[in-house]
Amino acid sequence: MNRKIIIAIFLFIMTVAPSHAKDSTEVSKDGVMKRYWQTLIHGNIDRTHEKPFDVSFALAPSYSREGGIGFGGSATGLYRMDMRDSTMAPSNVTIGANASLKGFFSLIGNGTNYFTDGRTRLIYSAKFTRKVLDFWGISHGACLVNPTSEYTRTQFRIDADYNYRFGKSFYFGAVMSFNHTNASRILDRTYLEGQKIGYYLTGIGASFQIDTRDNPTNPQKGLYLLLRETVYPKFLGTADLTNWATSFILSGYQSIWKGALITGDIYAQFNSHDAPWILREELGGAMGRMRGYYAGRFIDTNQVCAQIELRQHLASRFGCVAWVGAGTVFPSLKGFAWKNILPNYGVGLRVEFKHNMNLRVDFGFGKETAGLCFGFGEAF
Image (cartoon, rainbow, N blue to C red):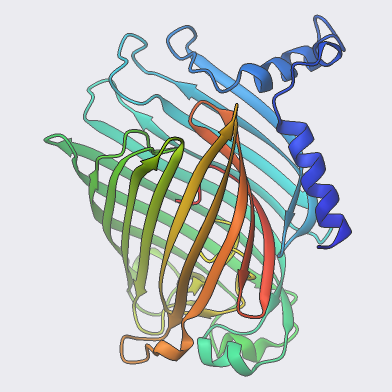
């Protein structure tokens, strides 16, 4: 493994790992360092019944195949709109920033807010990213034959899903999405296949969910199903046509022995024919599916992938995982080819940074590729 990667992992673990060393908390008895270490030592305790907003901070080196070595910070908070209600999981919010030596910059916020009526929730995310990326094209066929090029991608995106619960586990929701993405410093404009260098799109839609998970941020049991349909009207963006997107996610969690879970995930995303490149699916990246593949190494209109993961608690706030999976991108249902399915497998380390909120370090492998990724929250 590259020496820089090993150093990044070591510093990351030393930064976020729980510590009971006396000197660590006495760096400044009434200063920032003491409060920082206390949030790390006791951060995995649910204190949402004691304080209106329970927040922890982390500063750590980072690494991804796309951005290389960098440094990032994150604040994760838990809260309850009704502190007397202990029947629901606490609401959560995470805000993070990261910058790398390769010119990568990101500012991301996401969370889930549970309202006091006990039936409604808002799942949201917002991000601003600037990435200098390798580029092979915007279709699977082009990515197979094109030599490596480069471009800079700047994106601002907001997604929100407002749900209302019927019965015990059924949710119906209204969906909103805004995506403004632009490409610059493109070494070869032909890789965009005649499309514009930038678009902004506004989407509206509906979702249906079945959610029996005991906790959405670190489930120990249950099932999660999502069906979502989003329409991007022509008059609400700069695309030449109205576009649509269909999302499907099915995840399950089952205990198999003490401290161990077997988990599974199926993901499918289908977009309208000739969708703008900013809507197309990228195989891989650090977000949780096909880990180890360079994000954007394979791009096309649709994607399907599946994975099975074993999660084992080790001791204290530490755990480990191992997974296997497979996936592919393709232009249409007729264009789907079994021969294009790519393998994926890997191992990872978990540190419980906040109550039911893990920091993860994953090392994934694929066909002629391997990569390390850091992240907050489980892969799925």
